[in-house]
Image 1 (cartoon, one colour):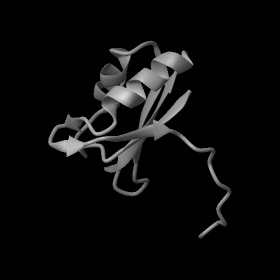
Image 2 (cartoon, helix red, strand yellow; image 1 turned 180 degrees about the horizontal axis):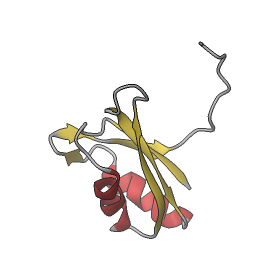
Image 3 (cartoon, one colour; image 1 turned 180 degrees about the vertical axis):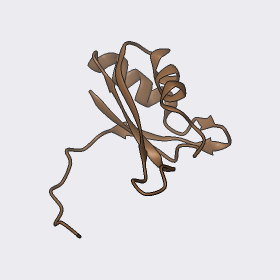
Length: 87
């Protein structure tokens, strides 16, 4: 299951994100989304977990949990929408 994680602390690394979810099951990938120009975190990311029930447990446990002073927003990721090119 692909999980959206919002309101991430800007200093959070992908390893820290992976660790937070690994407590609930196997994490196949963890990505913190960064700005292309500055390289700074945009404050959200995605975690992929192999087992759906583990992923749901992680969502239930981590949604609203404070991490580095910020309450996380955690839910199942929606499919990416096709947006018009802005360039």
